[in-house]
Image (cartoon, rainbow, N blue to C red):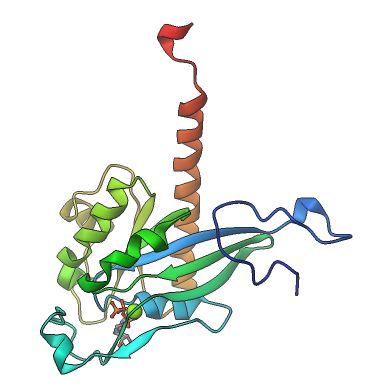
Length: 219
Ligand SMILES: Nc1nc2c(ncn2[C@@H]2O[C@H](COP(=O)(O)OP(=O)(O)OP(=O)(O)O)[C@@H](O)[C@H]2O)c(=O)[nH]1
Ligand SMILES: [Mg+2]
């Protein structure tokens, strides 16, 4: 157990190796958001992949809440996330992801700005039976230029669509990856996260290169 294991998440490298530790092996901790509409499987995904006991903030869905929450299409759900989920996964030696699952209901939008501070990127979970529920999350990340992948959580009773169809239906910017997954399955969830890290790495690198490239008219 290294001394970095329980540090606060952030997009910055965790470059503080302990005495005798090889600086090359210093852990990198990246912050990732797991977002999407109500009941799409965010808490399930964070729980499935996390190697620590995930922190959850679930509350029972109440009759009073039915007046403000759109629970249509998610009949069997009895609880909902009211603040966030938190988990951690080691992708490979020296690279950990801190996962922050967002609350799915509209009344918790005010938490998103706080949660997205310093995030490397996001997973937007989608359910093809209620694809429109992930529009706000897609808009949110596109406007803030936070790289994201769309992960279609393939519920057993939902019709299957290809990644290309989902990409078109959501009118995603070119290059935004769409991955099919099962949020309950650890390997499947890990695959989504690896796709996100690779994609976000490419996006951030391209931006960095853009920012240092000499302007054509300044030479
Ligand atoms: N059949 C099936 N059920 C799933 C899948 N993913 C999640 N569920 C179930 O769907 C329900 C919703 O999952 P949650 O993980 O609570 O969804 P959430 O997105 O965190 O919901 P909110 O926080 O309320 O927005 C739970 O009862 C899960 O067991 C899936 O891939 N297939
Ligand atoms: Mg949840």
